[in-house]
Image 1 (cartoon, helix red, strand yellow):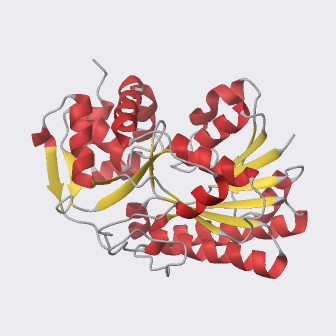
Image 2 (cartoon, one colour):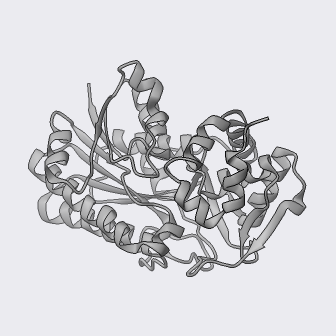
Length: 342
């Protein structure tokens, strides 16, 4: 039976991946520092049932990484600082975790002779998708400290493949959404605002476009990559072809909640805001046979409903590990979240 080390496995995508991996019969060990983005409650049922091992630790710590990797066949590397807005405020944290942390894992993988190092990256590394979706051969033009740190980690993974034969594969996915997504992200933030009657903050004109994928489809693509040999040293884009502007996403959320559109509020644009992200995912489809299964027409209302049905989860995040951020950025929303539920 294959044992996976899932770094960042208490985060949004990582916890959904770990949940599916257990169902598929993998042995799973999670390594997570439990920062603002990591939440042990995302794995509560798996932990209580003894279905996964959990190590709380930092991917930048060589001893922690080496101990966590013992007995594991492959690494699925989600651990990263991932929130663009936070990277604008504290870039150094992103460089340390995303670049140096990836180096630590690659070094440990080299010494342990792992079967696969699956590095989870982002379409943010391409910068603007001008005229057409970005392909794996396009240059990297990151526009935020987050995107730049992920681009650096990508190239480290490739360098370790070329120099040391570490069997690294890099995947670059479009914007995810789904259950347990951190409330700072657009879809959960808009949903929580709409549920509480708070204005939905849309940057600039709201015309910035993103390609969207349900987290379950992303995870399915990652398992397809794990199963297929001969992908080492490759970069694989993961996308659906389904694009929405941020304003269209806000409209979809208000419709699903049953809130008025005049709750939408345009706020000052953020620095370096990319106008359009989109990828060409023909390579992964051709090489693995993977296809997305859930359209945004179905997936967005389903996700909104999950947040409607799980207020205890998002209230605990906003009033807990993310409290400082929300009090600084959205103080009125933080007060609303802190009021007794009716």
